[in-house]
Image (cartoon, rainbow, N blue to C red; front, side, top):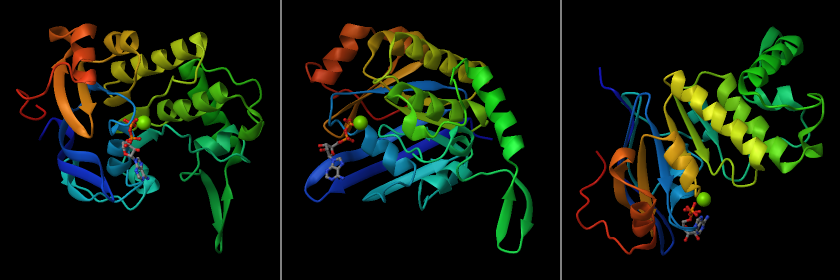
Length: 256
Ligand SMILES: Nc1ncnc2c1ncn2[C@@H]1O[C@H](COP(=O)(O)OP(=O)(O)O)[C@@H](O)[C@H]1O
Ligand SMILES: [Mg+2]
């Protein structure tokens, strides 16, 4: 059995003439938490969208949990065990909190012909347990997502990742729009995932957060992976040098 949960080979995405992602060779081991850092436009979100099937890649291979995958869309990736908090939130505005948590994986009481009768009570109970586990406080679970603050919406999306045991969690700038207290809550969720042995890819610009939370830092610059650094063998200054291009990845031979 391999201890690698995710591997990409030559993963590439071009938007017309824009080389947003160029030949990424990335590897994540089971239980490992890795940060992806890089300037705006470096290709971080593009990388996530190719892995999760939001877009179809230009070329390259994705191996997840021991097999080559070609996800048709984000729900497909989710069914396979990848829970993603996208940078631009994918929550259904008109649904309440439990419905958003269970979107695409509703608990069914029974089926009546083509209709499914949903287990609303069961979903509400599981939602309360999930939120309790994450210390996220939402005053009224029946509130439609539309009526919530940006921070609360983000917390619902993140609570989703802690409610279901997934094989891989990906968070794309989860705390960029959050206040101090909400950020601390999200960081606790990430620690909970680490303790549970669940692997994570965290995209963040927050150096303090990254050094607090992850094992390894990967830097993207202009669509390329330019560094793959063990946290214990680097520091903030070093990482910034790779982000800005002051230090190049010439000596870097691809991930792991
Ligand atoms: N749908 C798209 N069409 C054309 N260009 C895109 C599209 N999405 C992203 N890009 C371009 O790809 C590059 C990488 O973007 P992105 O992955 O969003 O960067 P990051 O998440 O690191 O800030 C940028 O130059 C961006 O303008
Ligand atoms: Mg991005």
